[in-house]
Image (cartoon, each protein chain N blue to C red):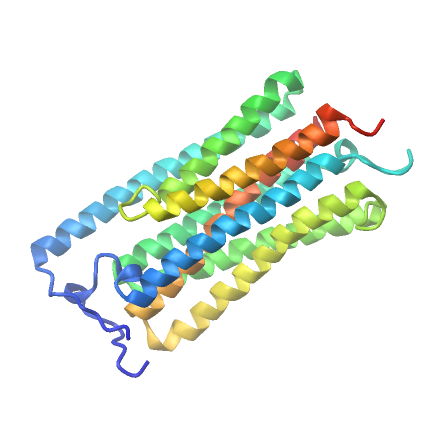
Length: 208
Length: 114
């Protein structure tokens, strides 16, 4: 975009930069439609999990109550919830035309997301050692497919936000890049929305 | 393409917009505090080993409350111009509840395979 103006002075920075252009408006509408579709996707995985929870072929397989630790799920929740707040900060600074602070908060969001992902990988490795794998039981398949799809979304979100930070580092803020940041932030919030249901339905109801 | 069609904003107006944003940020901090609180209560109730038939509805209700806070405050759904988005998300939620209800009915309550 040759004629795109970067580092606009604040007097000419729109109040809602993310939807100031037609492209931004289309992104906004299109992305929310995508999120509604994602809701249905995760719902089908939740339904499968609830249907197949603790369905194991024999007694020597571990069940949900034996596997899950509340402490780990709690720390993972705190990581993701806080990263959701830091991406709110990023959007706040984007709207205030403060590029460097926006980049900083996006960076913190990525770090918190990485912390979450590391704990999830640790959790999966531990369960695999305990004999709870994708192929060990119907319960295992449903569990890993649900949590794994969420983890995959976290990976995509991390790569996405990292690429945004790197790509925008030199060129700065415009109504074009503002729309991109806003879309990525919406995605990151949605990941947290899904995690709220995961920690409630999988972990909290699992250990009872 | 994507040029800015923005009339210059006066200083007073700019200050006003910024104050409104700070106010919104305060609301978002409050909703974050509420979300943390709801998470603590949910984990606490489960950790206290109470009667599941009492805890399960509360915990699921708090999850919905937390998600509504996330949608309305963090994802700005309370703002103007989100009517289409509400329609989309409600459709998504409708399918979500339908999927979960039907599966639970088939597997737990209906028990068609004995």
